Structures are given as C-alpha cells and as structure tokens.
Length: 108
Image 1 (cartoon, rainbow, N blue to C red):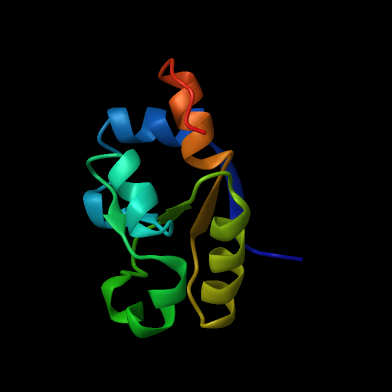
Image 2: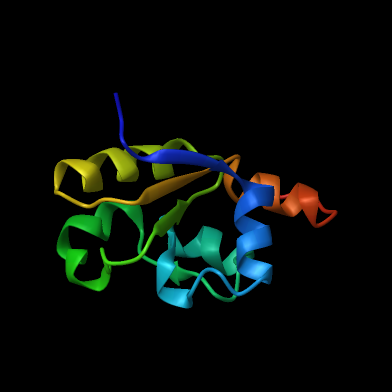
C-alpha cells in the first residue's frame, strides 16, 4: 500500500490560493510542450523522465504535490519517489485536465 496520498485538483487549488503551497512544492511532471500549452505559474517543471537526475531539486522537508495531465504519470512519480525515501507526497488526481475544468476551459 502506498504511503503517498491522492488529493483532488480542487483541494490542491484551495491550498495554492491560500498560500499553503510554495512554488517549489508543486512539481509538474509533464513534457515541455504540455507545459507550454498550459501550466500553473507557481509550479516547477520537472518532466517525468528527468526526475532521477533532478532529485536534488525536490525538498523533502515539506509536502510535495506532483501533477501531470490526468494523474497517471504523477502517481508513477509518487511511487518512484516513495521508493527513493521521500515522504509527504501528494498525487493531484485528474491533473491539469481537472484544473482546467475547474477554471472553465477544456484542457485536451
């Protein structure tokens, strides 16, 4: 059983809007072309395939929120990071598609 948690896009947006998530806590694991199309200004782009080489950029002393397009890649990254010893990981379910829907437009 995974120790990381699934959180809804709405829950994460509420935290973000209330200043409870710092910029380095929201990690977007999509590809650059997806990021260029739409992203949250406070997120940090670290594409999924670059995570192993960029672990030093992830701060494990605060909760880390992982987001992708729909929540599949972010769940895989949470699983990987957990195996590497990271804790307080959160997978944003529904990903950027859910965020776009909340904000009133279609992502894909």
